[in-house]
Image (cartoon, rainbow, N blue to C red):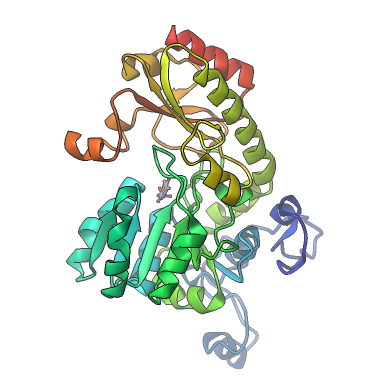
Length: 387
Ligand SMILES: *Cc1c(COP(=O)(O)O)cnc(C)c1O
């Protein structure tokens, strides 16, 4: 089934990109081979010189298992093209090196590795990197007019779940001839379709919701052919392609993406409401709550509010996290198992107390990644840890 067929998202998760297999396997086989044979030298030259599609060498991504995954990934974001990567950071790095050489502006809080890459490492290559928080958007037009050609953001952000207006920021980027790249890891394509809202490219840490089981590391890039194709030689020569085994495992996981994320949305909302009513919880940040400052914007640009929520407890955050039995203390997210992180001890530990204050990250904050356990069990676990 081609990714062009107008089918619903759950149907595309299962059928898009799958190779027809001569033995009747309903799913693409795993081709672990590194190289592929041709009938004659003219045929290999046709692939090498780009006249014919074909499998050639796995590091190039010219491997049937990887290319089938990429057709599925493109379909999930309604994109013309996609590239699979060995990690989310690999996808981001390749995009910045391809399209961000005039400078990269990151708006809002972002993944720690992203902040380091833009703020510390790209400048070592002479690529200006700018980190703006949500209350510094008045500086954005100046930076874009000054030559920064790539605007990057996450929405909802980590860990405060701040919501940025994708359509409005796409317009602002385009007014200066810049590209908007959205990291759609937290929302997943089930809850948010950035390309349809005007973004130029989408990146994912497929390690999170796309993989969904905390058992693989991968990344993805989706967008128009015109913008994705120039990234390909960077991925090839930086050696950032995923292993075929990982590509097959990710395609397996994507087949259940919609049911997983919808169940996580429902459980996260139920937990958010229970926490909002709890006397020992000072604040709940969840885009689906009417009390959340970004709720109206989230309701306009998202089709679901996600499985991530952040609570601020009245008292000792670490003691509450330590008291949880079902939620494991771990820094990642998006898997079938529920996880809890105290941002000050993990994701935002590297920032000093002053920078954390600026970003609104407090010691009492706990970030929850809601899994697929029975929601009653998760709420009971939180209630016993809070009491
Ligand atoms: C985890 C994460 C990344 C980095 O992804 P890796 O697969 O670990 O390289 C980037 N962005 C967000 C929002 C993430 O959560």
